[in-house]
Image (tube, rainbow, N blue to C red; front, side, top):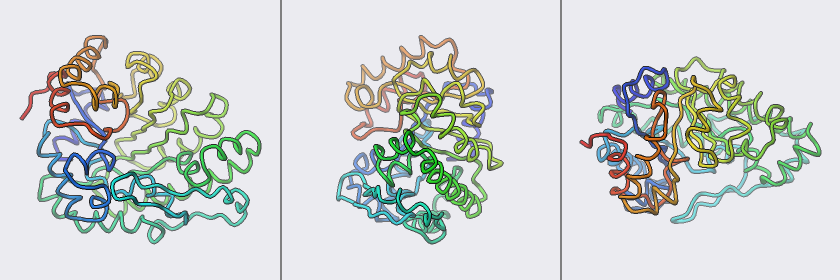
Length: 344
């Protein structure tokens, strides 16, 4: 993000923005194919990674892209640090191969060092190599990013095994989550150490949407609260595009000040549940509207959301989750037009 984009985002979060503001989470599911390359080439080449990201920034300068120049290897990024095998297809999403036997080895299960484990050193190395080019383009690295503890647990042992363990052997689930949270605290801290320009933490965890309130408060809230409140940063962003009825009333107390949600509830319903102090990022349907509809229908979808909202204060207009595969330049321009944002 540029200095002015970062300030615009902080103004939205603080409730002082003049709006409207539009933004999207962009990463390897959308960006490579939009740029015209395969996912594997995007992940494997510094040059292609940089050029794809800078083209998005230059094509839509009036739009916030979060976290901005995201150095990642899809869902394999954090699980790889724990030694799970990973698949990297030519033009499909990276996939960690879960190992449920980890649950039987928890006595020897320990937090890996993000400075040398899995793909994490490559994440940092890419950012370091490209940092000068990013800054020469007027941008900087602003946000430390990680999948959340429940999300990582599900990729390590499978979502089914993790959720069964949570109910039948809760002490095992806590042991697993504690080790993962220790690791995440170190991983986020390492990102801040490497790049002093970072002033935000962004956690993604859809597994919280699979929990009832009692389980959310026991198995999700304390670990996420520890991470969100563990660093002196201005932005504390949470992504969960699974169901959010249970979690939304607790987000402010958990430390979140910007929430990207899905489509199970309307924008106004989420606002009512989350309160006035948490900024919201959403929320037209990502696949069925932004990716699949005509530009006119995309324009109408975001215009309808704006018309129904009592206020756009503390709002980043977006889709319900990250930018999905297949979204065209024309549909993004239609979204911006429908949001009343002048194109460059």
